[in-house]
Every structure is written in C-alpha cells, then in structure tokens.
Length: 329
Ligand code: KG4
Ligand code: ZN
Image (tube, rainbow, N blue to C red):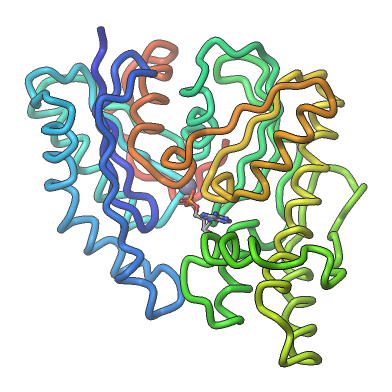
C-alpha cells in the first residue's frame, strides 16, 4: 500500500488529504479563505499566500489526524506546483518539500489541471478510455481527450474569460458576492432559463470558448432593464454557459469516439451542468462520470491521487523543482 499526503495551495483554498493507492481517500481537509477575499470581490494574491502560510501546518496536521495516521506512515508527499498564484503555490510546494526531506520520502509536484481531471477518475479508476473531459474552473475552461495514462489531447479552451470567472464577474456585477458560481446556481433554481435570450458564444465553431461577450450581454441587459428579476437573470445566464459547455463536450466525444463524458473543476459542481451532462450522456448512449461535489472545487485528495499515478509513471520530482504559475496540461 502506498500512502500519499497531498497539499493544495494554488488559489484560495488551503487543503490537504491522505489517499491510499491513488483512490482510497482516508481524509480530505479544506480550509477556504473565501471570507478573507469576499470583501474585495475576488482573490487577492498577497492575502492568499499569507493565509496559506498561516494555515498549511494546521490543515496538514488535521488531515493526518482525520486519516488516523501520522508522518511516519507516509510513503510520499505531493503538492500542487502549478498553474496558480506564484506566492500561493510556493507555500504548498515548500511545505511538501520540507516534509519529503525531513521524512526521507519522495516529493511529487502535481499539475492542478491534471488533478482536476483525476478527480473524476477517483470515482471509477477502471473507466474505459478514451474520455472526453471538460475542465471548468475559475481560471480554466478546456476540452481534453484522455487517450491513455498521462496522454492528453487538448482540443480547445477559452479565448478570454474562464467559465467560473464569468460566473464570478456576473455575480459581482449583480452584487451577489464572491465566489459567484454557487450563488448563481442557487438563484437559478427559482428562475426561468428562457426568460432572457443571452448569446451562446462560439456555438458550432470548433472547441474554443469565449465568455467575455456573454458577461457584457448580461451587464447591458441589466442596464436596459434595471428591474430585471434576478432569479431569471441567473437562470438565463447559467443556461447560456451550460448550453455551450455541453455542446462542445459532446462534439469532442463524437470526434474522439469517447464513450464517457467527464467534468472536473469548480464549475463541475454546478447543478444545471451536472444534470445536462447526465442527460447528454443518456441521449447519446454514453456514461457520465461526475466527481462528487467535494472533489470538484480545489482539494488535496485530487493532488494526492494524481501524485500516486505520477510516481508510478515518472518517479519523484526533484527537490530542485519550483512552482510553475503558468503550467499547462
Ligand atoms: O476549481 P476551483 O475551486 O478553483 C480554480 O482552480 O479556479 O474553481 C473555482 C470556480 C469559481 O469561479 C466558482 O465560482 C466556481 O468554480 N464554482 C461554481 C460553482 N461552484 C464553484 N460555478 C458554478 N456553479 C457552482 N455551483
Ligand atoms: Zn482548481
């Protein structure tokens, strides 16, 4: 058995988890900094790195206690080393390297995007490849085909705002607070998705996305109709985003002959997206692999799980490696 401690500090969650053999989650602790950043309407990098530095030891200790284990039982320690905020990443990377050095066990640097992708795999490690995967978070929107272990083909990505970023910006404009995704998701439940015909950007035009114009369309609509009903706005905006996301995921699956639709990243927690992906899978005789909610947003379990696969495939990461803010898949 291989027991891995995974640390995640790339953005505004300080998280740690203990995972056995890449699949068995023994603990997963997430300390969200949302309250610290909320009054600024978004993540403030300097505040994030300081908070990570203060929180990381306690979060790691809690993950070990929750797993009923301690440092001596760990076989490897991993941290997310990119992409993300430079100062924030460095906190997790430094903590993991220090532990690896002290405990004389391997260190593994993990790609955050690969980890979001693995979160769905955690639900079923035996799933048949290829997979059509939609990674939708606050910083990324991409459609990827997974052809084999660590073999990814990026089909398309956003040319401007990420999907989560669009949720956050629209929510901020509507005065709904940060992060915007969960609030819009909740409000949309009581709204009519057909109330406002917002544009479906880049529909039918390959696998790239664009959400900046949609955000502007919402702002312009509210300027013209200041008394617009917020539930209807939320539902109509969300429907436009989800329409485009699902359409491109299915098109990618068609092109690659993928029999499984997979989503990952914070926006994968969106209830409407989850329903629509399940419906799309059913309609096309496919399977939908949706990570449980706690594995959608940033967490340490996805880091520990990915590290286990990476350790098997490539061995440990050298301690001289750093943090990589603009790492790609
Ligand atoms: O993966 P994540 O935790 O961090 C990044 O890697 O960016 O994703 C955070 C993003 C935020 O933009 C947040 O608004 C969005 O995920 N999000 C959601 C929902 N929950 C989180 N968006 C839509 N619906 C949700 N339920
Ligand atoms: Zn993320």
